[in-house]
Image (cartoon, rainbow over all chains, first blue to last red):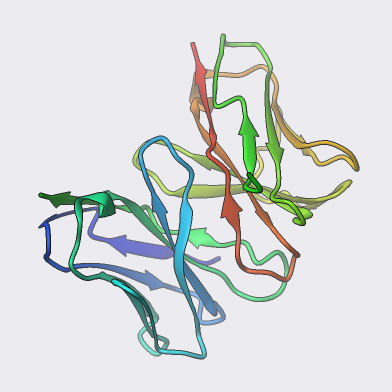
Length: 113
Length: 114
């Protein structure tokens, strides 16, 4: 089955800096890669996603890049703000069957004011 | 609020009791997924249901756990004879269709077994 590795497990940055979280996946059939933000005591919230027919997608301060050959994808947050502090999860899904995503173990992002 | 709803938000059970967790999907969504999250870990898939059907239960423990999504009412995840190892956050997600990748999560139920 699919295996998703996520790094780093913890990331501490100063407000205004950029943050990058990286994930690798094992199944070349995976073609959908969402990113979720989970704040303390809340459920994961879908913040951005990318499909394998594109290499990059941007939404304001958040961008995701995908390298299908290397089987890795990354989340980039620019101009970080304290409210970006949360746990971020990457995931990978493939077509067919139930489209069940496999999640990474999460990255705890701390943005210091 | 048309988001995914879960209740209760917090549930405390003694060992051996039953836990019932409820999930109402987003309006217009007919596909429900249950996940378990242990501290410091990611989300682990448990079961995927459509109305009155279990589609994929490959992540569900073989004993004590069951799930349903009746024609009317919320989806229910039931854990019988709970043990301390069942303590976790349980999240429900919904999607518009089985061929839709996008899943939207509820706030979760935090189960504590004493």
